[in-house]
Length: 581
Image 1 (cartoon, rainbow, N blue to C red):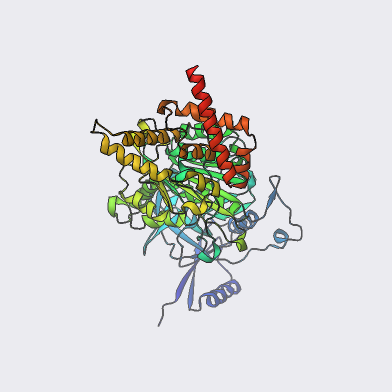
Image 2 (image 1 turned 90 degrees about the vertical axis):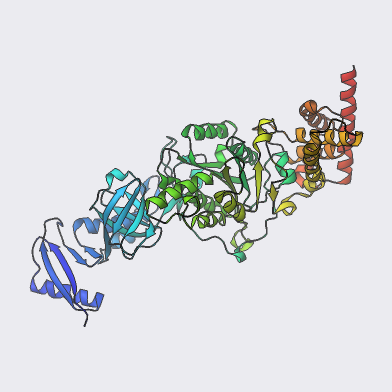
């Protein structure tokens, strides 16, 4: 025989016999069991009552009914900051309903997390609201308690306080109006330019597109960096990792890629995770001064913010990007960097009492990033054909790519651009290591012009690096070896590129064709930079339409190749004549 359910009725006055019978009938219909109703005198619920049945709470006070109405109003679209009056609509016809709320109790709070009991039916990732108005998210579900991360000051949450479920998952406002703005992980503006009118909300956690909802990555997303576009091309919808030690130019590559998207119809999102606020401000100013902020959203969670905000940031940025991708647009999103994201998640997991694994990371740290990066895709035509390209950044220690987080993310992504400290400090910038870098999409996302122009440059550079190491202890080299070393040194110099100076496709093709034709072989390495600048100016002056035609069509005809070689040889001869004169 089952025990009867105990229901507690809190009100200023006890119910009449008729009211008590209605309560019991409602409870029996709702729970299907024998119910015992106990009255508790309380002045805390003016204008109504509160009924508690186990974890379920029916708040029929003025405050409870007002909360129901407030939730209705949050779903109403806004216009010019004012709620659209729904005459004859939902607000006029609204009436409060006997909806159960599940309330819990705060057991402990500190360091941005709270332990809560009594929320037996809360789901993973659900938003909960504390009595002070601070919101949190359920991140650890246990038999006796639930671990929640807080999106506000933990000083406003006290032990013994009430916690209520909202039945909603974490979401972020999205829309066109976020372009050109700097926001935090919750979508709130932090650039001092006022509120942002959102077009809607999207959940920060969403399933990745299925295989049938995707199509092959076959359109290039050009970075404007000769070293990358020629050897490690990135396609729209690809996930290409940028990996290297601290201060090797990882953010510079991402920033130049964003700058190069100007006029190409690509929406850019830069997510700064655990960065210095001053560094984010400098990056934002660099985007603004170069005309790139207008098509960019900056999502910033500085190092001084809580681990909870740093954990949410990349998912929020991804949700903002999905809004544009679902509309058929192309999106580029940079996660800078996922090493700090993993550290923030590790801190939260340890605070929530999860068992540590390798390097003290929790067991699901792989899923932490796989469910984020898998959302980057090139959608099928049936879903609009939009794309989202992800450039995650990971910091290594001492060039160790075999550490836990780097190996995890390398296995998730479609290739990596490895930046080497020794190359960076030798002046080779971007400091791309040709041997360890790879693009698993490769030539499928490369224009025919670039594929034809690049030729064997990667193989030539790999052979040069190998020969350079082999011959560094030898003083007597034959002429063929010296020629090969000189050619390799020239190629390495050619790939040096100043920051904020991305190149158009036509310019890259001209330089590569000239280099592979060995026009620059006898140019001293220290003069390659000046030769490159002069050659581009010479070609533009002699045949103004050549580079533009290559950029527009993405094709390199035999005639255009021959013309480039002819102009390069003519410039070399003219330059030699000037030097002799």
